[in-house]
Image (cartoon, rainbow, N blue to C red):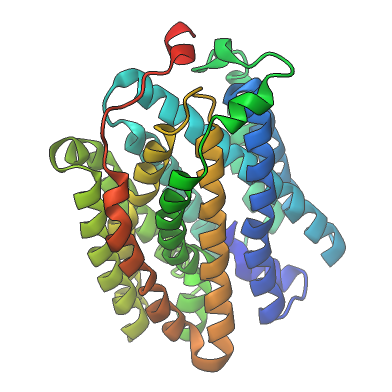
Length: 368
């Protein structure tokens, strides 16, 4: 979606400020989806939520390519954003549930698959931009594939589904999850997503606009970011088993800072794409480690803690995109990426709160 932001802007005649506002509003609206997901997960568990959210999400992606007019685009993006919030919460809760069963770090592997599909999407859109494929034709194949996967897996049994709360018991299950430790974990996640929001929201526009990269080259910024992210995540579970999440996250904060500063100082597309790649490597394990830490504060194993912490990813993403959008008229995207690097100081300082400790094996998970 973000790789085609310039084409969406052109198709609907939007100004730079308007498209930047829309980019920022999607994760802002997704916060509501995450809050709703926490309520639904408390009652029914994350499995049914996942089934419904993924269908709505892929249908919304398909709709973005065919709607005409700004009002219809806004309505479609609202539906997309709500489904993204719910889908993220459900997917992450299932990954943490599998990790709780395994008794060792495996959640990074799930995030690696997600990042790998980000590479596929960016490469596809790079081809679509380079060959002049329309919005509808560009979004249809990945959306259709997602819908087929959703339908094919609808009968699959997921962790914790046998432990869904009985009607009327959702409030006690939700209240059993403490907010205080989640706020610190959420702070780490939010700061990580300030940097990721700056990358995902404006990398294509920065390379294509400020650095004069072509429409085919610009999406490679996100592809490079996703490539190093998936490579890092494919190795992160083993690294966490050896050194622990705090050390890995602190080292990642330093690497991300170096990458963002390289992006800010880049003389051309090649250096910027290299900086985005370095940032992806540094950020790779921050979100998985935060979600895994949140899962240890969910005594019912229902995904409530994960859904709550997931809200902070959108808060961080909104702050990152809003900060770059605000700085852009004054100093361009370069200054925005330099400022985003400051958030990594907070990540390094709070990384100790992501210490692994004993993994919970929830009663409901053990019986599902």
